[in-house]
Length: 450
Ligand code: SF4
Image 1 (cartoon, rainbow, N blue to C red):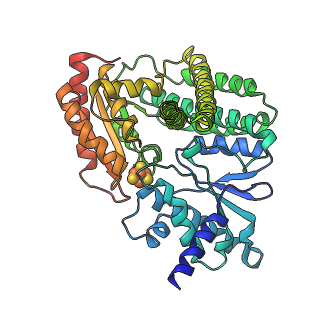
Image 2 (image 1 turned 180 degrees about the vertical axis):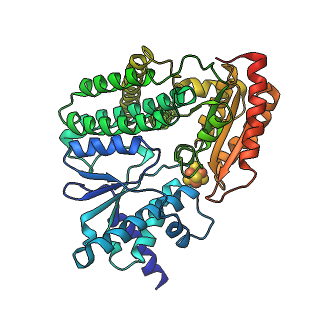
Image 3 (image 1 turned 60 degrees about the vertical axis):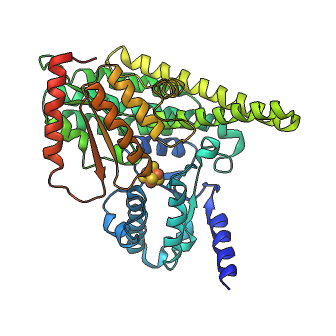
């Protein structure tokens, strides 16, 4: 009996979690940072998909109700988002509510942590609610660098990937513009309002131009926005200590989950730069190329020709993809840097070299820890005045990052602080950040900033 139930669960996972054709469905995207998901939604809309970004964090209590407290915090927040959305739809539509009209988007990653399990866990919870077992979960995996096969018609996949990647770059740029401008804004609140408006404009731009492949038109819109953002800066405000933010991708970018840590840092005199979303996307492509290279060496040694050929193709494809991604990224950043001195993003190969040189961690272990530890070291080398590691309370890679990076930063005399988040309000958090900013200001006075 137990065996039958197990097989049934596996069948359900295969049938209702995976890559499905999204045409004709309401495609529900969870909000991670305040910009990227909206731009990606614009790309889907351009391809005729009825995509929308769900309201976030309002359903946190629902997320908590259906979890035990041991799950990763992003899993709880996103579960709350989808349950809250469905609850509202059921109330709004009554008898006309049809769960088959919805498709919930929850990507995954392989490796030693639990992100690969969120969509399975969400599936189990949705299945326990009458009717909601019919809401399919669409997933992409870092296993194949988020390949879109099956989600978008094959003949349109290449153009979609290009527009999707650009949406991530542009989202990262808007974030960097926000963090560069807000600490120096002429009047309080103008930058937030400006970025919200820019997000709306650029979502429309992606919805209009992605399908036709006219990505230059999107970049022209971005250029005009960046020119406008520059005007918001009050040049009489002197530059402030520069803080590098690393950590787990969801919580460090989801402002409600991290209780707007960057804004708190700014309140105490910081200019902060968070790690980008693009960094993770580039990492997944780099990782596939790296694994293909290792496999190639093994096949060559044991003279396995069929496997050798297969992995050679993989190696070339992933390297070419990475080359394209870097080229696009460079192009966008360069265009923006004509107007505003935003920080560049790290190259993943360089981060791997940093880890090897310092001999403190390895890409063989994987996870975001290899990006966070190496980025913190790079920030320190470039003269940043402090490092903040933001992560979910029980996050395994981020706790690894904390245990390795803290002593490293102490050795380099760079202020460092861990900010762990689980949805509760910690009374000492603000005092700790304030003390950290005092240390960062001292570092700034002694060494200046990059
Ligand atoms: S990175 Fe951390 S929060 Fe994310 S799945 Fe892994 S353990 Fe959980």
